[in-house]
Length: 354
Image 1 (cartoon, rainbow, N blue to C red):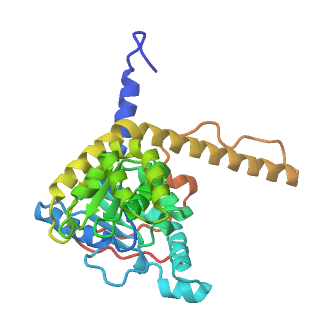
Image 2 (cartoon, helix red, strand yellow):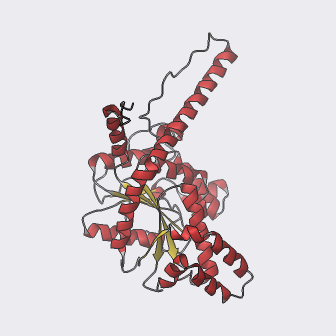
Image 3 (spheres, rainbow, N blue to C red):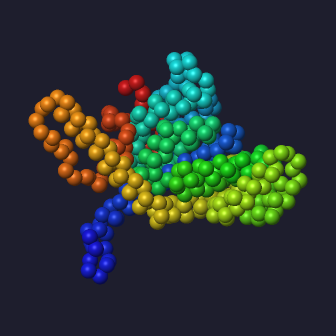
């Protein structure tokens, strides 16, 4: 409720402050990128970089097919879902097995959210890093990927980190393919977005930065291409010219750790942007989803009562509790709490068959 002069009342201020605290910590970084772009190496170097400054991140691996992990995750999907067993049991190929593994894991994702909530309360980690599968489309365009993203964004400040391979993007056509994917992920997730130009120790990132900010320079590069895709690429560049101007990008080396300090400056700025511009929208989305679920549940119960002929229709809910979490809306019912963890220690996984 507002006061007569239009300023928010003290109760509104307290409620807003409470909501702000709910989005305070940790900052969740969802790391995406094409296969071979160096996502896992980037996460590993990010982990060692933060540990130098006594800021150990909370690491979450969501790639069930990863064989060699260069870091020790706090939560690992491989402890819960056996990738090869999923392929065998469901007669699936590699990508289908990854999607199915993520779907199975999503049914227990509320437990992961509970662990992140404990991190928030204890303030033991200020950054949580989510390493996603190498097949980017498997996570980005699957229902499970959307659920995981929305669950994180509705509870914690969340930033999408798109890792681009500089070595493989020297061709303007390949570069445009990467940018088109970055654009689609940006508008699908509706979250603060950072493009990491990886492998800057191998290839000078100047060309990519110039192409992003100078349309004429990119067109000149396309003119040197004889491929039938050059005309389409030129048209796409004209369409996405404005998109480039607003895109935050930073060249880094996941091998040497070069420019990671600049990357974290962008992360801090993106977290502030989330609080200012995205938090209100995600709060609104969370409440709308809760209202929809309650309405659907009421309708099902009303239909059941009518079909069985038992008494009059009585509303099950009379008011909406604004404090409900997104995990209460469409994730599985709460199971037994997982054991807590301490900084730097691996947390035992949970079995999806429980």
